Length: 193
Image 1: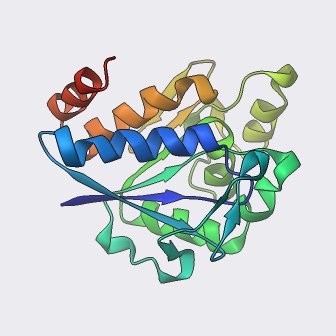
Image 2: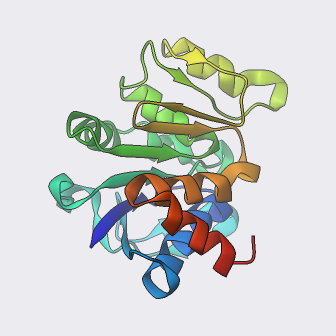
C-alpha cells in the first residue's frame, strides 16, 4: 500500500492538515487504490493552531523515508510557533531526504516556506500565501524561489499552493500523484465534490 507522511508541526493549520488526512483516509474505504497516512512530529504531542493538541504516529527522527511515497506539509500560524518547528534542522533534513529520493512533496499555504528553507526550491517555481501584502511571497523569493501568482504550482514532484482555500485541491492532487487520476476522481465523487 502507498504511504504518505503528514507533518504535524507546532502551530500547524488544523484545516490544512485535516484536508490531507481526510482525503487520503477516504481512499482506504472508497478508493480504487488505498493510501495509508502516517503522522509525524518533532514531539510526542504537538499543539496546532487555536490550541488543538495532537499525538503523531511517529517522531520525525523515526521516519524511514524509503517507506513513504510522499510528504504532505500543511502550513501554520507564526502566532502559534509554526516557524520554530518548520525551520528546524530536523524538518529540513527530512524534506531533503524526500527530495533526494525524488518523492512527492505537497505543501499547502505557508507549508512552502519550510520546503524553501530546506533549499530544495531554490531556482524552482512555487507559490505560498498571497494575502497580508505579499509578505510570505517575499519570504519565499528570499529563499531563491521563482514565485508564481497561481493558486497551485507544480515544479517536478513538488506542489505548493496559496492558502487554506486550496487545501482540498492539493489533497486530491496528492492522491492523483501517489496513485492515479481515476482514484482521485472517485474520492472527489464519494466526498460529494
